[in-house]
Image (cartoon, rainbow, N blue to C red; front, side, top):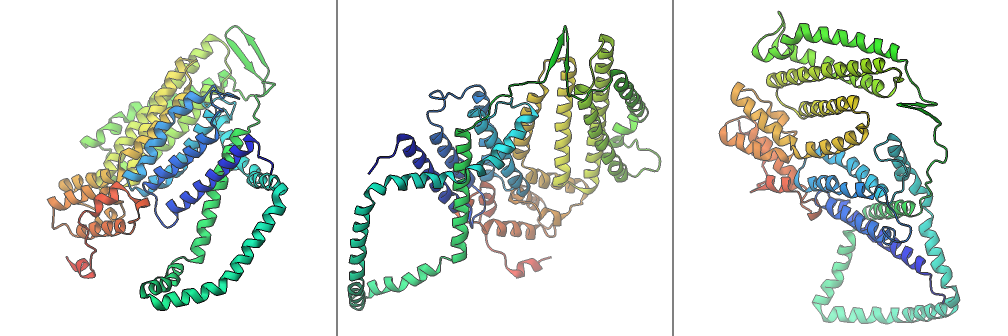
Length: 515
């Protein structure tokens, strides 16, 4: 029999490891909610990935360039993976699936230099979509080709193998009737042996055909996708563009063809006009923007209505200003030094007014929360405003420092912000803030607290300890404990659910009749 080539052996081992990865994946996730299993899954993928690219980093066909950026992504990937074993917020558990997928794809592409585009350019992420969602399916036939090559290598000894298989089959056929008689005799002679035989149908009955088929499908999906994705990175044909856009350079200027650019006078007029309105708005209403908390409301304006009506409009204006800012940074043609100075000053004023509007919107939302309570959406909007404020400060730096890479800063800040919002523990903060509000106002929406995850349990228990007679709170705690008790498999282990269980005693219907 012809021995397979070394490269074929390696790729066959890679396929075997991918199949094992698929089997482990279905065991981790089918019939069990995500928990510590996510960490095992991610570690399994990286084991397959690093085995597959062994020898390609620093050796034959060296991959260099952006690998160092890829190594840094291990930090957010690890932190987001860890959240599945610590927290139980359902929104972030879903969002983190997409975030982890995007980060892992970005990291593997960077470490293998499968894209020639800089990671801080938008075109890089367009290429990521192609590499992650389209290209792997072009290699779906590769596993079958590897198996076919291995089968061809066995054709030389096929005749001998067939004769051996024939003789084995004949022996099995002859042994069947003998085994039937022997097993019947042993079963009648030993009750323990008989009990084992009788248990076989029960064991087989535990495995549902539909469930088994679903597990096979999930295992094959993970195995084939992981294999084909890594195969696409190993045999990437990406080549830098040979012809770049024509550029005509003069001292201090660059002219790019095929790019939309606005006349500086037209753009300057637009920015100055908008800024005049914003400056006038801020000057006249400054006392109202920040004085509401001290009772300085316009005549006839209710406390909560003022907060609700002003917040949404200010956020919309802030988002419009971000669009104007991006256009002002990239789509205004550079001409004279005076025009350039006007452009920078106009954009700076625009950012300053936008930041003031964000601060105003933040304070209005705080007023609204004080009147109606704290929810996940409201706290997320708080976080988004802080995030938007940081982006605006970065944009202001970019206005006056042309060489500053705003794209790099935005991507890094976005990843850091997303990881931080995961570790803020929103549900616990919501429960704690609503508890503090109850201390001040004696108002609380207990029904909403029941929609939170088990992350809120410590704060709810503290609230119950301070106010044991608060109606409905015990029922909420019992419901959260019951939800945590539904997922007891080791794959679903989670610190938040484990802490919520405590001394869990399943509630009885009579418990909910307590007033």
